Image (cartoon, rainbow, N blue to C red; front, side, top):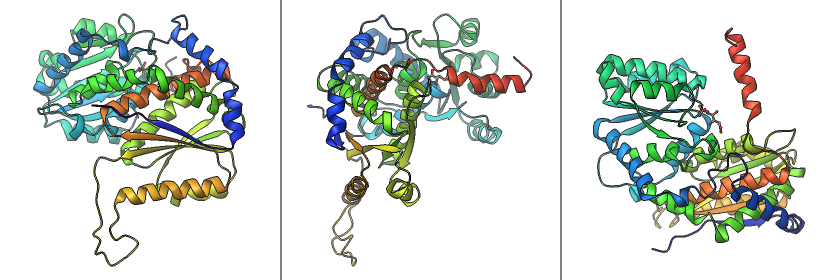
Length: 418
Ligand code: PA5
């Protein structure tokens, strides 16, 4: 089957694309640096496309063991140890990707410190056959640790100490951290998050792949999609988009990322992390903000059209949505008669582009072919590369996050635990 590729269109003043063209040499150098293997935390570059059969089968084997004895899998993590899996889980149409069989429901925990959220989760799962998947590279992040303590206690109460250990799966560093130590001592089944891949660049590793495989997604399709973006026209497209973002980012302080399908909302949150945590440092960067269409056109839409022009827009549009409803051609209201939701979703896109170009807002449209696992893999790698190249063009280190530590220190100081 001939797979379709995502497409990028620049609906901006021509000087933006021309100025970005002048950065082509620098963007090429940035990609060479990323691919060169000399920069720390670039293990994600070309990672998906080079996975061996043995590597993929091992993830599928662990997923199968989760499936055998669980009706619910609780995936515990935050940041890069949560957002990518959540994005994939919401984005991928499982009717298209699902392998035959029965699959556990997936719940997420450990990305907030809400007692209400976790108490409700305990209520929801305590009568079910459940297992835990704890994901933490460092192994010591407070939010997932708290959820793990809570849910591990529930697991032990329900199954006893020994059976509980068999129902805990961990993804963490190969050697270091509290979670590695606990996993080795207790004998949890573990998969490794490579030490040269940071959290927000880890969705195409077991961090994203194991929960998805457990949920029945064909992870081979995700990897194939990612591989298709590792070279050729999509790599060129990522470089170009990175240069355009660098140019726009010098003037515009916000990147509004609009999505037109609820299935893309979590992917937008993933992009907010990817761009925000990779580029927002040294007093630089554009603030990524998600905009749900049509919902937010009836709120932020006013600001976008007539407010302070501090932003540019990236539109994420799925060309072939999963399901459709057609309004009967006999409908009494001629506006709707014979039309589908897709017709109207495309009309809102076109209407938004028309109105926002009238207001001189720079727009980059990313057309996503569909909600397949393949498209998801392609999108992830395309945006990871775009983000890393933009960061290098800006002169920041896209792979660190020193600012994230500040709140953690404040929280631990408050708790009296330095
Ligand atoms: O991108 C990152 O590195 C962060 O968002 C981390 O993923 C997040 O802070 C969670 O860290 P950990 O996986 O160590 O618990």
